[in-house]
Image 1 (cartoon, rainbow, N blue to C red):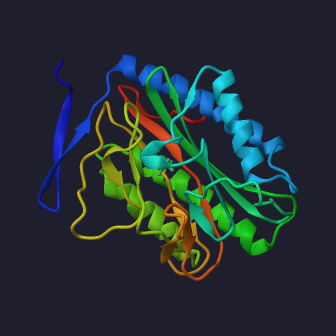
Image 2 (cartoon, rainbow, N blue to C red):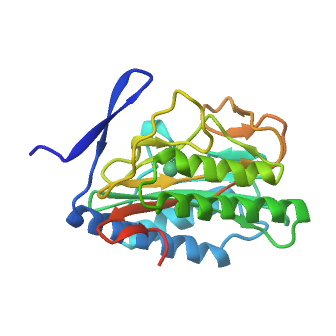
Length: 266
Ligand code: MF3
Ligand code: CO
């Protein structure tokens, strides 16, 4: 069956954005609502003294119990159900038995669920107990960056880089660095689809118009210091280059005939 799609150019290469039917969006919505419930439940689960592996096991069992599959597990060889990134870890942290969560930590949990073939993707940074005012500000501003990105995406005639501009400007105004090496992305039938949804703007980037049928993940990754990052020798964990903390919030959104809908919020 031919898929409904349109093409964009990125550095001269042709890329394809797959537009989703209402029925597909409904399936993705169910997957997203399930993921939202799981992330809500983590408010009472993420505690000091717990290992990131225990937190991963909780999420993994929760997903299986609710009839889904962890979509991150084995994705390009990723070894766990969840990405758990603590403090200076930005994204793609691998859960570990010996990584113990402490009071004041910023714990970013990034999760993808496959429910009947429909993929959801969402992340939140949890503050463990009491933390510093600077950490609180970082988490608040990152959440605001996500909200502003969503708002920009929902404007009539908006393009993908309007999201990037909204996220970047808010982070920059608050003195924070914006990760440039990783982006949001189309999602729904695969975990990573086109288009890329960057958090900063540069001239060569593709800038497709946002239109009905698109489903994508908006995910600001904000650093307390420099925008630069490095990858740990485990091949996955992304760390801030200066060792300062980072925060990460992510929603999956859909453009329906009624406009933008945040799917990973109930
Ligand atoms: N939400 C993450 C992302 O968009 C999912 C990563 S799954 C992993 O990059 F397996 F690549 F870690
Ligand atoms: Co994502």
